[in-house]
Image (cartoon, rainbow, N blue to C red; front, side, top):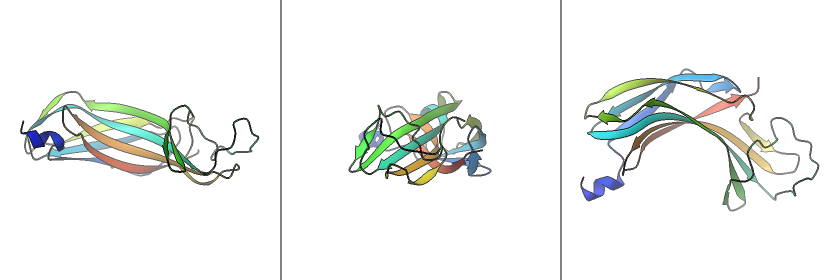
Length: 167
């Protein structure tokens, strides 16, 4: 493999096709992942990931303080794992995946749809943007991500934000 090729993702595209972009907690998302390629390469696996992330902005209130949060505004993430960027703290709330293909040799001109199903957990929070009772700004996002994993090169990826509401 040429040296610079290792720094670039394969010349391929992946897209996520779903019938709608609004779902409810506990619903199963059904769709297709479409992969097309303009070069030969080997995929380690092909998968669809569902990610839920909460971002809090503002001064953190001490644990144990009394605040009246709703099911929409409470935080569902574990506070043990987070990323800090300035005054924004990002908490991973959920990450699930479904493999649609194991290792696969992709050839130039390849085009295929892979059907998938992935369920949104019923016990987590809906998409939300707004102020919490403790005066912190909360943004909760849900994203579908199509991934073609490639060994020793960047993966081929596509993301699609979805809206998730309570039942």
